[in-house]
Image (cartoon, rainbow, N blue to C red; front, side, top):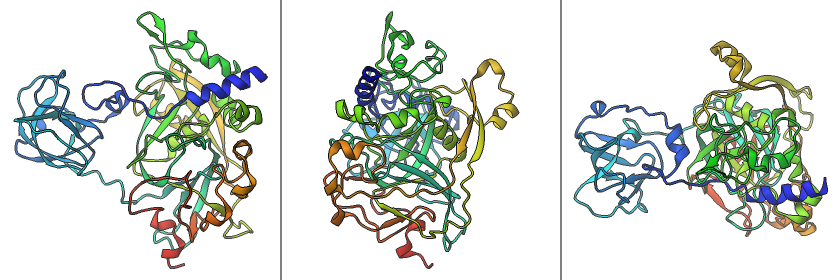
Length: 453
């Protein structure tokens, strides 16, 4: 067991978030696989019309040849005007760059080409929040909570509908720590793998079947479970991103929320492993910035969270606005699921049992059945002063201060039963960085200092 734990820690250290592969249009194989194209043919385009770019990192070329290295990139919601629909090679059309971010440098050329499949008629507005649910990840306590807005005008406390454990980035460097900020969910990918395929998909129809339930963590490292590349087994760990991955925007620093190795029957076992003593003594086992949770939780999130859902990441002390927790019950809600094979490395469907049965997905495509206990009872994680913690001790269990921020630097409070913050700003600390929207630290619907309550 000790050897297994040591190796487990060493391997999880390698499970980096992000990753890109050389693919023709965006450099990101999974982004190209999952994109739901709204423009399917050149004939749908209007010459002279301005379109919005629907993805990040779309390459601009000087010709319609894939081998062309490119003149730069345009990103989501940048604008281009279609100059000539062709026909040209592949999916390319000639465009004029109308508007792009100031830091996107496009080299001068006589003509510009992009793939028409990444053009939209309408601007994608992720910031405007019109839904009922939002997510708060408290990096300090390694907890993810989902809230429902009970009052449309935010004049009453929000209702917590899920609480789950996370493993956040190591307190090692800015490259691997989890960044705070206000983001929006842009898309889901089922059975994601990094572009370089160091961490092959949990499931892929062309890969060997994953280790069976109960095989233990070390099995997920064995070469026989890795896909073949040029006749050789390639990959460091199978299924490091778990069942689903939630991608967020903007300025996400390639830090997403995803599952982990193992099966649903393993529950939170591998999340707990990252917080045990031996793992943290011999290695840095958490993540490289992403927020990792168990596979049942990520599958449930995939079922309930639509594109556009706010993901708010904070670093705060926790408390209860109503210590009596009136309206909350300690009895968990039950969610039945069936994990299926369709949609691997794409925007795959939910695992909700009713959905699977209604859609008539046959049993030969079922992977695992189970019931997830949805924790809907708020539990405060106490803050431990950073001056009382060492690196290893902060990583063990739930100390409420994984990056060891000193008492005088903590700012405000997060009321976990109400989904509100009060007096909160991100602490000024060398371990804390912020991405997301530059003008929105937390959602205005959860900031008590700006609401009439």
